[in-house]
Length: 542
Image (cartoon, rainbow, N blue to C red; front, side, top):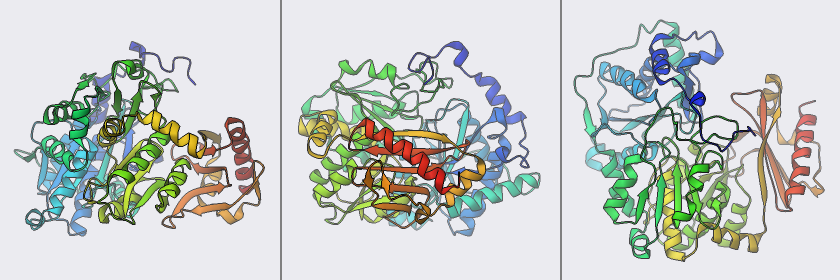
């Protein structure tokens, strides 16, 4: 923990925005250097212009690769494009538009030149493709320009195909490989044209109007609860006022400032500025206002994550809120399919497992990455999909798809509905779950690992683990594939009756991540964490 974690940023902590943007245009990446190549993680290509990992060259090549990919897939409709408030997002959108227009792609940008949250763009794709008349013009897809909650110096670029959610690894691998080929070829095959005029789309109005199909605004309005919403300087800044005005809510946008240096933030656990609404340190200034509202919420820069603050509980742990949201939704959405499952990533809390069992609902446990929930959300077989990192989405009242990407605005509004309908805060409801199912201790830590060890961990088979006990309990499962869809988890998960741990290699650092949880308290959790490192070390031959 950094000594200044949770304290306001100082001048020395801030980026030089002009230098950052200048570097975007002036620095040219060397793709023979691994860190400067195009590489798509679970949420697109990310990097910084200052380290030659997110520059104009990258965006020219990635956009051309996306054009070629969508052509090969027979995608002929419009491409929706939107950007968040990071300093590198606007120049990246300008670059992308040059390539899209140069390739004669029909592209739709925001009608009011506003920032576009990730869920608003996902919703736009889904709504277009669900309309037979529009679909006849060709399937739509999209590009979201955001590094999500990453620090101010970072940029991000993500492709969402016609299903509206994050592209799968087949698509992203093809796009990344082709983009690197284009860079190696000196961008000779990249088509560009000055966009004299592009079509526009009112992302904000379409999204805000559609919210009536998924949130009970009558209950929220009639309850009179006081809501505070902090966009954390992100893309949702103008959406919250529009939601307030459209539905007549007692809602205050507590911070309307957009500053690409994020000078108003408090520092995260490691001393960095990071717009993570699930972090107590990043949310310290928001939590300080908890007593002024019945519910206070936060979103990250592209509004795909949520933070829930209550006067009686402060900032909720994301796992806690997901469990509360699941129990509430499956009791208050009677039109959902009777067999609609509860989706969670395998590093999310087992409190969700116990809630699912009490509801008599099937638990669908998948690897890390929201993309795994996409098929189930589309056909209604998954009612709710959530990640431990404060990202989730769920179905509309009628059981049809809302978004296939994470929607932080939606989860904040759901917290308001829960408070209005039950008369209890989500924190209070979680305490009720603890009384019924136990009080789990959960933590994520990092352990040092060489690149070779990380690679070995990513390939590790659960059967290679020799241990039979975990912190005094018999091991009941050793997983290297997710129970829900049998997809490789890129690591291992070891489970006992009251505890579990999962180990996965980091994609950016020489560490592996250990997620662990125990229903027997913090002391038992420490034993689980220690044994996790020993068990993984033995399996890796260390």
